[in-house]
Each structure stands twice: as C-alpha cells, then as structure tokens.
Image (cartoon, one colour):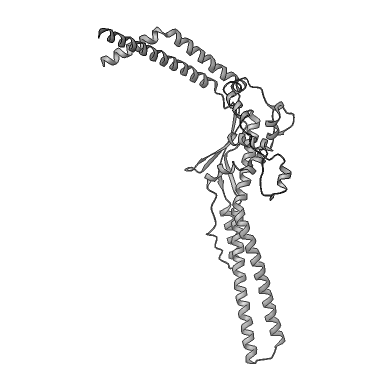
Length: 370
C-alpha cells in the first residue's frame, strides 16, 4: 500500500511538473473538438419502426366461408408464413432496389424542384461546401487519391442501353456513376432487425432533414413492394399452373357429360347388355372427371388464398417523420471526447517520458557505482 502511495505521489508530481504541456495539448484538442463540432458535415436521421404481417387470417376465413357454402372443406394449413426478417437487409443491397431508390425525386434546399438522388450526387451545384471534408480529403485522403490515380482502372458499363439490348430484360446493370451512388446509399439507408421482438427499424441518413424523411419513406415503400413481389412469385407460378389444370379438367368434364347425354339420347328404349356396359363406362368416366375437376377447384381456391396471404403489409409502429435535430455531429459529446483524449494522451506522454528518463538516470548511477 505504501509503495502504491509513493508511486501515485510520484506520478502526480510528474504531471504537476509538466502541467504546462498538458494544459496546452488539452486546450488544442478542445479547440479541435469545437472546430469539428462547428464545421463537420451535418447529418439528419429519419427512422421508421414497423412489423411485417400477412393477410393470412382474413383471406383464409373469407375463402373458408365461401367453400363451406358449397360443401367443400378447404385445406389451407400448408400456407407459408412471412419472410424471415433477416432477409430484409439483403433486399436493401439489391442492385434493382438501389437503382430505383437513386432515381427517387427528393426535395433539397438548393433546388426549387425535387431532384433525384442521382442528380444530387452527380451535380456539384447541389453539394454543400464543407471545410472539414475538404481538409480531410486533401490531407488524410490525399495518399488514397494518389493511389487510386496510379492503379489500373476497372472496366464499367458506359452505355447501359446498348448493353441491355444484348441481355435479358431481367438483368440489372449499373454504370460506374450508378455503382458509386449505390455504394453511398448502402451506407445511408440501413435496416436493423430485432429478431426477438420481431420489430424492424429502417434508417435513412441525409445532409438535410426533409430529404432524410423522404428517402426513408421511399425506401420503406420500395421494401414493401420488393418483399410482396418476392413472396408472391412462387404462389403466382403455382396459381397459374393450377388454373391451367383446372380449365383443362373442366373442359374434359363437360365433354364427357355431353358424350354421356348424347349416348343416352340416341339409345332410348334400348336395353341390350352392350348398351348397359357402355352406359356404365361413360358414367364412370364422367364421375372420375367430376372428382378430378372438384379436387382441382379446391386446389384453385387454396392457391388463391395463398396468393392473397402473400400480400405483405407493414404495420408502422413509428411512422416516418422529419427530424427536428441533427443526428451528427453531436457538438458537446464530440468536444468532451477530444478534450479527454488530449488530456489522457498528454498525461501518458509525460509519464512515459519522465519514467524513461528516471530509469536511465538510475541505470547510469548503478553503473558508476560498479
């Protein structure tokens, strides 16, 4: 305990001795923190908290009641549930999703009319000058700029329309500029998934308050569209197949009914054994065709239920709103952090330097005694 007290006293004496340096470094870091708080680029955050749901109960009850009227027991127990929320962040990274988002009209202060995010990021007239970003670009970012200039450039699609003419229309292509903007949007528009609570939070970061709200709302609407399309794709294919089989079975059933009726009309009053055998055969064919038609009609109803269930709806627990305060930079917190870092680093520097100096003096004295 005594040794610790002595070390603590020595440390405090060292810091007190070099307090001028500590005060200067702390003050410089404090001023740097104030500078960042005043001139760092402003960022506004808009959020939307929601829960994904399907129309399962409504669609199931509606079609079940209809089926019960005609005496059909509609089995809808095999319907799929909602998409796993963990998939949603991957949808936000989809090129098609990002391309639609970047061509969304958004209101910005420097434009009297709404402009797309593509225009905003490609036209320097819409960009706000920021001192901190400019200093960082030509100081810390200068080596990276030089490195990119000497490295071989990657090949990108320059003429998308010409390129698309040789591909299927479902292929999404991005130009070099669109790819750069897509990389920006991936960082600015994100979604957090709370698996335990089943709640999702979509966040949009933009340099202006109104723009952040509009981008968040558009991203939310696009996500709902993509999730519904993804969910309905399989159900739609199954419904189309069942409808085709249903129509064929219906036509075959009606054809066999007409054959049986024609045979009975043309053989009235005939009671031969061959007539009885042929009549029974035709009646059996009609009955089998009727059972197949009834089963496909039941499957058709079930497929329509699944299709309507896959219309995903998002229940908004906290809808999008225009933020009233900036999200970053947080001036007070930023200043406190830089002040603390300046004080702590200067204290560590003084203590290490003085400790090393004392150690060298101790070693020299021990050598001289020997």
